[in-house]
Length: 431
Image (cartoon, rainbow, N blue to C red; front, side, top):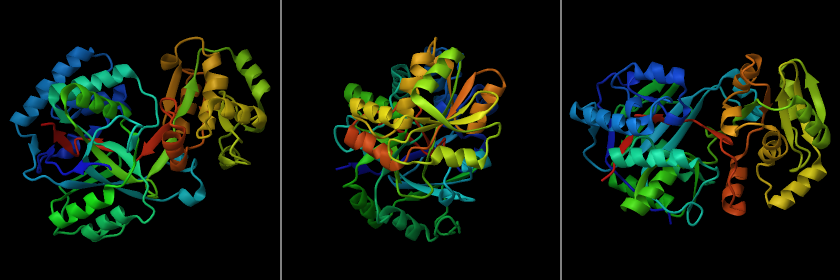
């Protein structure tokens, strides 16, 4: 059983200009974004994100000092009563990202719900909570040190559950008295937080009604959870459980069947390899089924086409032309049997056959992860990288299969989960 419980949230004090005080989740912030958000001295970024050129020890000390300042000056305040929280995120997608999706999944606006709760921590994959991505140990240690020094969770770990009858989301809509994607504010149930960040609107409602809390607890108790966003934070929370006896962490639970929950690919831009070796590898394992000097709807149609579960297709841009590479199905089948994996074969093929054998340097320096095809293409056009690989999205069902059936992890940066929570919407003081 998933063990959840209400808690007293820490939030930015109502009445403040909180649009200036929230920021994106720490691991999505680049140098330019850091500079923009950090220009406001009370922005939560000063306790959640390390500037890339800052020493890790210095960052932890800096974060603790700023957190103490925020609490002493009541920039941050704690709610009086334990509660569950409904976190709503309204967002849109850029045209180049929409183009990646099948037409049936394209919408002018998405509105996702999540339940923010404390959840009892357990070893990943050994009970009711599983992960699906590999992590970097050094980043986990940094998150652990930050959480322990500050005794705070600064943003909820996002996890997915399967619920075909949509009971939890239906309960939220009944409680708030509107149906998504429409939003009709109820003056009797105003949100604690209502703020727009980078075009996405973040809303937080507090649920203290005992009857509703009990209903939520009963609905959630039999679920299995799959972490979508926050593998490092969850692993750090597990370290706190083992080392410090802290048994609960803050999570946001989202329904996998929700049409507003999207898993998109991280596209790769790659450098420091031999073009001759790349051409040889493509000739050995792939055939080019489509090619053009333009990135068109036909490109995505060819990329998404699936003749079978072993029909692996990769998009590629080399600075001059876009190509769709179709992997040899017999070779893909052999690779699948050898590894005992079916979910995520596109990523396995890309890394095993093209990226890992070809890069001369270190992957963390010579592979760039990009949220949109346009970003990956721009990195090639700027000559910063030599080639971009554009990928199909992975389905929720494939991620569940990887975690609960195959019990394996995808490579780092395999799935881009949308929507993203923001730092500063809901926090939790660790007691």
